[in-house]
Image (cartoon, rainbow, N blue to C red; front, side, top):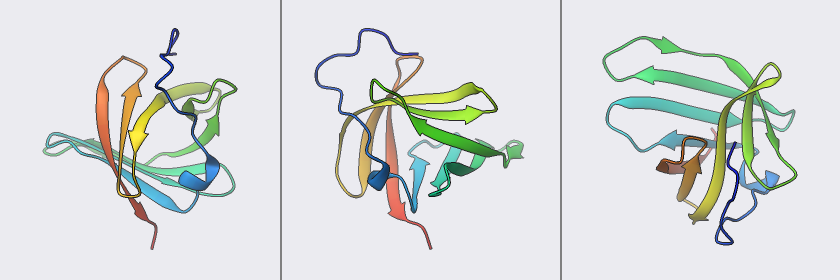
Length: 107
């Protein structure tokens, strides 16, 4: 997980997630998460020219404000929110990489 997060990290709010789709803004890596009210996440994960996986995962907001996407009991993805607006969110992944995610209302 992310230890020693800076004061600029903002806590996630469920209203930012439920009913929204987040798409990683990346040319090679494809990651899409659709957050449902029952804590399920419909995910599309893969590479542009590679194999895709479509797992059904779970999501939770941890006590320290991180978004955790779980595969069973294990966190498959963790994100701290740095900044954002209704269409775009800047996060830091568990590996420390900054990522831009595009946000839209699910159809």
